[in-house]
Image (cartoon, each protein chain N blue to C red):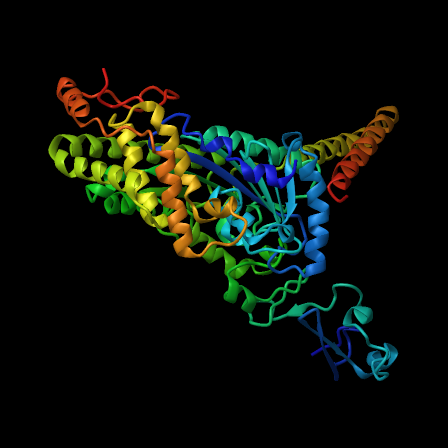
Length: 386
Length: 171
């Protein structure tokens, strides 16, 4: 399948579905693998790297999961196309910097992506929407099992899978979930949560991983350690912590509604006004305002059928996605204008926040509002609906 | 110091060579050095040629700056710079320095997770071959030759299977 087709359309995992989808945007599990006795990509000479790619690539393309895949060499991707893939989390920022001797193979649904010659010979990942760490692991584990029949992976009985960086040795697994936690940020509890999560050996990062800013109230939680625990144990530990963070976020939302309704209404109302009426907007502002619109959907300020537009805008307003449709490279100001145009158009029919309805339902709920995430898979159930 | 070759005479010729980044030392008496052609500069290309493979022990194999991975040529100072290793063999080359680092990084020091199925199968095969070999020995001792012949054939089949399985990954 041509890469152009993959780039033209978003992935299935970003659909705003799955268990706990209101707070957990997506789940991701990646495995790092290397060929035994071959120099790691960072140390291999150009010729060696190309030879390794030629060895791995046909095996990856031959996977049953990749029957309708897009397989593309890094040097054949334009800077813009690479950035689109980064924004979709299909390749890492490091991989986007690669050229000759590196490639990426992605399935049509964009739920699987396999980077060849990133930091390790193979970085394979499965993506799912909502909190589906186990499902993501199951998918990528199957791919790994299929590949290890064909390729000789570097494995040590004591240290497990051997990776370029010692921080990945053992399982070579990094599992992460992207959480949308606006109420924890609005109520200044996020730092406490981040510290607590760090203390128990899990990492909290911004939107695009290591060293990136937390935009749009989006945070990634992932395992830090890879040696000494089984894959299932790591996933279990991560899952438990994520469920706790979800609970904290839900409590923070309830508290905001009950104790500081004006602060919350002000944020929701302003985001609505600016998103609908701005004529220039940078991506940071867009993400933060869209985050509040998303919170508005979760809390029942907007009808459920408006949720998808907001979810889609999260991706469509990212710098590379924005420019994908235009023929020439856009300057920053041009991008900001285009971004606000896209948002205004998409939210043209967006109804104003139903403040009265939310407040009334909140009172009727008599302090025991329904758990928005109690029914996995149901979309956009308001916390204060019957 | 005794001569490494005859182990009788006192060594008077000291040969030091750097091979693949590792220092090798050979000490010889005059007679042995002549016999091995050390006086001829073209005659001692490798210390291993003189004493047989592996006889010349590499010295200073610790975490010295000049330590190189025999497989990929990666050095310890390179690791200090990038924090990444050169190849899978580097894990044993630099194991001493890595151990403390891994301890600080991870929950444990031993992998308990997934193991490649092919490796599991070959380990199981090895175990089976070991058991069968023991049975074979006792069969021979007990002069049960028919049984021994059957066991020998079975071991042969298993071993060739194992070789085939190991070879599949090399292609």
